[in-house]
Image (cartoon, rainbow over all chains, first blue to last red; front, side, top):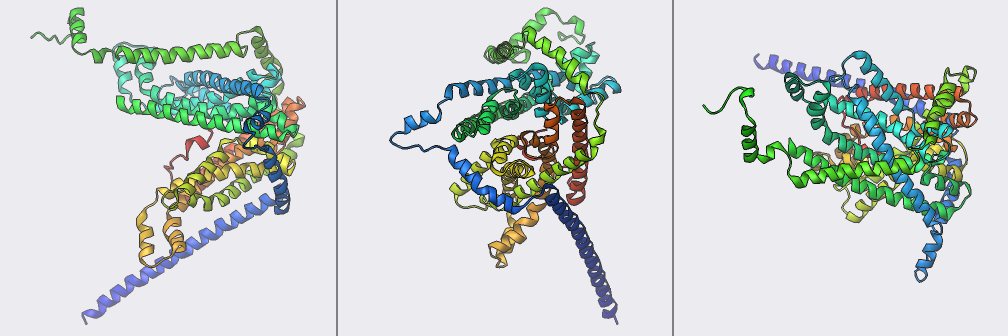
Length: 296
Length: 298
């Protein structure tokens, strides 16, 4: 008499649990089936649109491997220096292009950061003085970074001719869009107390920005700028494909003329440079961030 | 009371005395200041040299600026070529499909390799280190460089673009996935081991349930990013809308090029919203950690 209701009670709980669990499983299965179907539909649609076929791909493999093999000319141990200098027969020109590439990335980073940084003060919700200015600043930054840098490069090549200036301007525009957005986010996360202090002491808008905001945001700005420089070195290696200067031009010519060994030599230079820059920049970046966290 | 409570009562002598007692409060030490000035001075000097070297300080540059205003911006608006809209939209579809297949292939190749690249899954240090460096090598060339090479290897068309994206993404996903695997909770794997599970069971029941949401989220995020990349690969002949864009720009059809650029921007935004929506639906990660910064160009 006393045991029966409690057994029935636990039975009820168990049954309820079973029912809910079954329902949960059913829901999961429906979700999985729905997303699975959508995924397979997308996959089939993609394969049909791009005419992707494994056979064409496999057909290309020997050609690709041959291409890769010919990029590295035979280097013999006992005649290594002669072989190597024969491989890098055009080293002088390539190093000049590589230096140009680095300087292009540097100048574009500086110019883009300065302009983007200036715009970011108008594009931060807490600092902009009226909504129209804020809205316009945001749209300018959006357009600058949504249009890919290679498209900017094509446009600038029309006006400035073939050469590094078009590339620098293209990367500058892209940089100002990206930096402006990131900097505006940094600006939105600052403490308002120093600004209030300056305002109470009679500072104007410029004073507030220079002494209230800048000291708070500068470490983050610097860190983003070093990171952007790394990305811009990569961009500077490719804008040359459309005639906007840098090592990309030499690479493009070598690929078009099927000078495989040259392609290999230039790619090796690019990858060594990018890895060195990344390591160096990461070191400096960590130094800057370390200092920033130290001062707080 | 010697201490005054009014600002106007503080004399220059008081300030000097205070400066004497706590020099650190009033300014950085000389060495640090010199270092900062040298850094800023060097940066400015190099900037000036670059401006001079590339001819920004000459009349040619101003001429280019006015030419850009007149002939490029002036001839881009209003956009034209609406009769070609079906062709453009088809190319946009091809672009998104390229990004989809490239991302998928990259994820497919990276999944097994990412286990080799994680410290907690791979016992052999050289293999783990080697896989990581291999991933770095794949990532360090831009999509366009790979596209240029693959156009030569497999011919003009979307296949070269898919391969370019797949190769770069393999590198990115090895890095992202192996980081997710290295951050997982050991206890679930120990649980599976204690019940007598072999390595297959450990990965299937111990590892994948923990890392899969993170992997899916990162993969979707990179798909979003790859739609942007895919839109320009056509400029070197690797298919998609970029092929038409490069063609129109080289033929100086700026108004049609402008229409294509607008279409690309709309597509990028649409995919961004869709992917954000899906990420929130599937994984519910509203506060998603940004994937590695150096792989993602904003």
